[in-house]
Length: 480
Image 1 (tube, rainbow, N blue to C red):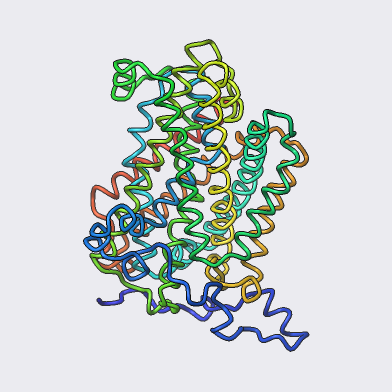
Image 2 (image 1 turned 180 degrees about the horizontal axis):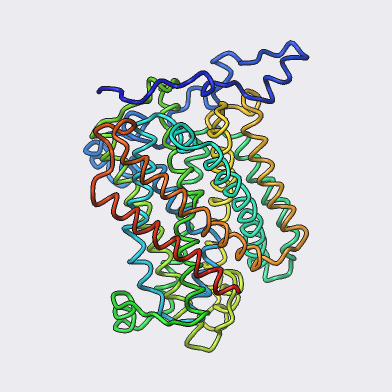
């Protein structure tokens, strides 16, 4: 396949900044030997496109459910991480306040999410680099840099809120006999060690298994026995209220569902997949095939479907149990789990709490890693989860900074609701300009060649951009 992308400049091959600085005063090599870079020598990649570890589609289906799971990768993890504890809290609040009135949003946002994440995956597969690098090469550095700074800040705040939710879930499992504060540091250490020490393939296998925690919310929705006709009606007939509270929750759902960190994670994890499969240079990764794109699109579709199914079930559960019983003040997922116990039985509360912990352990590493990927791609130095902390200390330092910042926010007992509001504001402001850049980049014939976005994909991305822009304006208005 013809490679139409411009050749990378020397700046795109910068060594790790910390390692380069240390090498000036010590005998440490600026760039370590190739054999010392990979974190998982001898490991087979856990996910990715066919050339990056996913078998062909026909071959995967031949091996049954486990073979199909091998086909799934970055798209599945992206969709699952979208349902983090912060999102679960938002969906619980929507259901408790407005019953089934926001169920239709799960259906409405589904095609928008598919179009955005498919575009991010396609850009990475065609260019061979992450989204941050592609954006920096095409658009003004000041514009891209400002967006990345805000993404890093929003991710750190989100990490703090999610750590607090994981700790609260752990406390719920002990019957509230152990305070949530005792779970904060162990949870942060577990996540940090996993990212620093485990090989790339093991990390992604852990992520895949943690996505199973999301089925907790599907099971809970079945346990509470929602009314069939009311559910069908709320699913397909949009309900809109022109008041501050309803518009505010719609804005929060959009900001939680279409978050900028997902854009960077999707593209960067696709690149890591190709690296893990042996395509170590950009030249080797550039260009993609129809087979690879087909596998990536299936992966994205399944991931986004999974994400929206969980969103749907949480709103359905909260609307059926909490709203109907007058519990309209639910603000967080842990409050929803506590409220479900007397109303829907201890089993529903237990399952809900387990899902809260599992989704947090999945989403927090994605938040910290996507922040690190965005920064390192903007500055053009090397680094990734498939490489060792010793060889790429700056990349892992960024992960630690984001994790430590979130932990500090939790330890200082900053109001998680206020933190989520701030995060929603930042995501609402940052998402529209990034979506504009993605839409323009994905249509650029010079960069994308034959893989540029079609009419339907472009239209859906622009619809999402318009909605997110309007959401940002409405959010500011509702807060004022």
